[in-house]
Length: 125
Image (tube, rainbow, N blue to C red; front, side, top):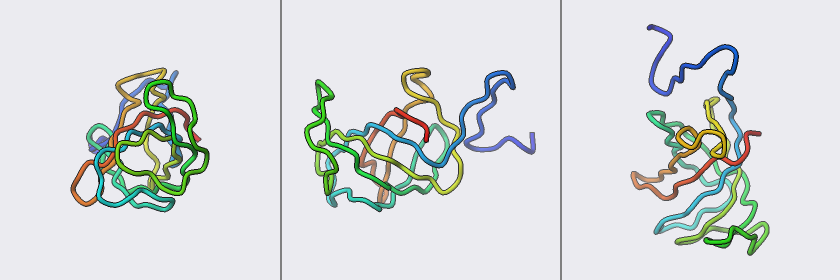
C-alpha cells in the first residue's frame, strides 16, 4: 500500500500501461481569456492525477465535425477551437490511447483555476 498513491494505476505485468512524458492529443478549447500558444503552461488533469505540463507544439487546427485539417502549425488557439497538440508533462504519466481504452484516454487541461480544454490521447511519444 505504501507504493500506491494518487494517480497510480494497477495493471497486469503481461500488458503494462504505457508511461510517458510526451503525448499527442486532440483537444477542444473552451471559452478562454488568453489564447493558447506554444510553451503555454497548464495543469494536466487525468483521473485523480494533476500534473504540471506544457503545450510544446501546436500541430494543426481541425474541423469540429469532420476532423479534417483546416490549418497546419497555427500560431495560437482561441475560443471553441479543435486542435491537435503535443503535450509534455514534467513527470511520467500513465496513459492509454483513446481508441484502445476510452476511459483511460481522456483528460482535461486547466489554467488559473479554470478548465480551458478537454482532450483525448491520440499518440504516446
